[in-house]
Amino acid sequence: MRFLNRPVLAGLLACAALITVTAPARAATPTEQDSVALHQAVAHLPLAPEDRTGYNRATSFGGWIDADRDGCNTRQEVLLDEAVTPPTITGKCTLTGGTWDSWYDDTTVDGPSTLDIDHLVPLAEAWDSGASQWTKARRVAYANYLGDARHLVAATARSNRSKSDQDPATWMPPAADATCRYTADWISVKLTWGLAVDPAEHDALAEFAANCPDQDITYTPTD
Image (cartoon, rainbow, N blue to C red):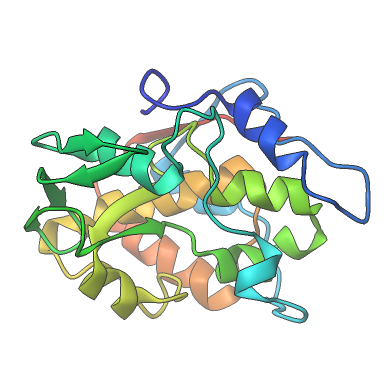
């Protein structure tokens, strides 16, 4: 997990709170840690149809922020944290050089320019699954969440754009050994934020999980 190398959640929420919202800001405050076995985890997710009414990528979640005001925004923080060979940092957190492993497609990447930072559960998917009912501040917190390394992933632009906003019913990472990790991480993110699954997504996750070695998924719900 990213806890030691990332801005604390309180700093992120302080920045998010600066955004004008139409309702009182609801902080994504971590509560007590929970754990559930992968083979039982899908049953813990609420089941509901998806609804994309009102979604706008540019305004619904906002962009990257610099939560701790150290000059590096969320994208840059993820790149720094996931680098296999650290990049050179110049100016206002300009990154050059370095290497990364894109585990979605088992690809080694030189330099940050061809990397995207993927929301493992995409923003549109989050909106469809319950985030449409959140305050803007909570959505900004979700989009920039650095409290758990499973939420944001440095991936090749090719794999990220192939995925787009699809859920596991229609897209899984192409790397053969990525399926179980992706399944467990997807479930953990949805459990963390109380997001629902639709019937096709539920069935796909249940099938993938059943074919993976059982493991405990540990997560910290946000209220």
